[in-house]
Length: 244
Length: 385
Image 1 (cartoon, rainbow over the protein chains, first blue to last red):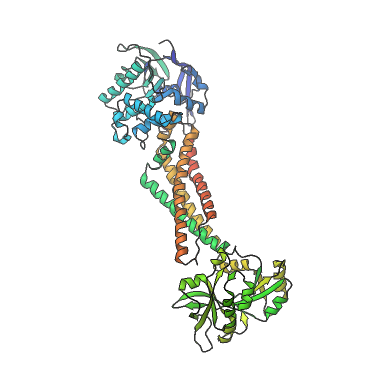
Image 2 (image 1 turned 90 degrees about the vertical axis):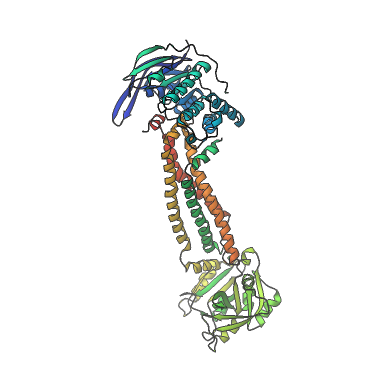
């Protein structure tokens, strides 16, 4: 795991809340190797989600450098960043954030509308992604017809379908019961180990963090420690999902 | 799935709201189509009339008749080729059906209006029969009149000398128009002025309108001015205008239809703007997180703006086109139902204005919510800020 997927150098992030300026991250540096599965933990307001947003290219740092897959994303314009996200990152949210008016397969297909893939190929990729998350039989269901765990699986399929190397997950099990949460985390683990996806996951749940290779602790916008490898983790497989 | 499919799916996320909004757009454009066609009847219904004729009437009002002695004076004006005259009779058919009836000098009228087409022997019969009547094809078809029939009409203005308001005329001809525009105007009836003049209880030797046919190359404005100057300070002061202006001013007696129509449409569209604008704003407000997710997935700010704007355009376009189509259908039904006398024709121009209105309205109601969606910051929207 010597090659870096994410390199963060001296990043600060300041928000303006009315007339007040709040510095959330203070000169943070971090390196995440390719194929890693990192859990970001810390108390509320510690800057976990802010860091995740910066890694996923949803926000720009106030200062410092961020490289993902060797690309300096802190230098990209808003339009370039959108294009970069479409091809390089998959997102999984706590509340799934599926489009309620679309079926599971249409939700998964959404990111592919940004590609030039023909409809037949898109359909094929969607079917593969739904199969990977074990929801092939629920393709025609709308989100309201699915359980929370199933919705999160659809969200994971949506994150996977354009075959990004990096998945960022913000509390992916925060809205699920223990059993379902473990299933989802197991799925993420498979994606990391079997398909070589690099995963950065924010969580409050120490049990969820155990599914990651290592845990990083943030407090008051600073990294406390580079967490050690969890005992259960081995080397990840590097076979990418053959979706393209 | 396609991007269009995504727009349509979003449009029907709240079916009842969308259907009600589309219904309000349909109603607005139905009203727009019908009122515009009504307006065009009044404002440009005289477009088919050329500038070869002037109408001279009493300066005070056309209800005040002028003596027939003005005819030779009018014909003496340079540029005037021929003069006909016409008197409003106020004919009523059967119970209470108004028939546009005018008493005219047949020969003069035939000379001045070559647009009315009828076999020459019928024109002769009209000129030579005192009790003759000729009817426009539309009227004759509507009431099933045939040449040779005796047509009883009563007049709500002119009783006969014996006091009776009932008159009887011999239908000697049915005239048609020389082209499509004139064919649509064949909704009047003409009777012989000589007979009317002798038999009626009131004024003699007078007429309401004098139709002045201009000679080749005559200047309509100059001739009008000369005629009115000729009768200035006389007991029979005149007002002369082109036939087209006369028709328009006649219509304006009812009121400025164009202005009324514009105000009604302004009120309708202003209300519609609020209704559809509110629908669009609410629709965007409700799915701020979804729009943020679209951006997260890599859809650009412009794409998100495009999605919202497309929804507004689709909403207005579907409602607008259905509304205009219904107006076209209803207009045709009204025209057919009135035997062509009331031509609510939703023509190409009205459609073009309608489509332009649809696009302008789409922008007006969609642009602000679309810009809001475009400006959304992903991080804030996902955090519910």
